[in-house]
Length: 103
Image (tube, helix red, strand yellow):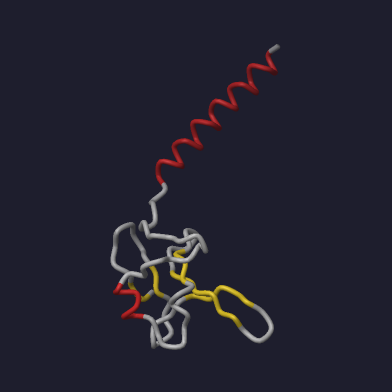
């Protein structure tokens, strides 16, 4: 019977910890995503920062790193690559609601 109480206590502590950590997460800027999963209206600042020869029609804002990525279709494979400025820096949102910056 004592073992059951310990498991219940651990479950309660774990649940409280997960709720607390979830409250600390910073949301990424809300962007309009279409049925394809890509951003429908890319922010003007991102368009200004982006180097040429990147597909701005297939951009996603990744929650994992807060950076913009685009779909690259190559001769062998299709993959997501970081959207970069003309000097090669990735374009990211560091804070929710912040203007895109070159990291």
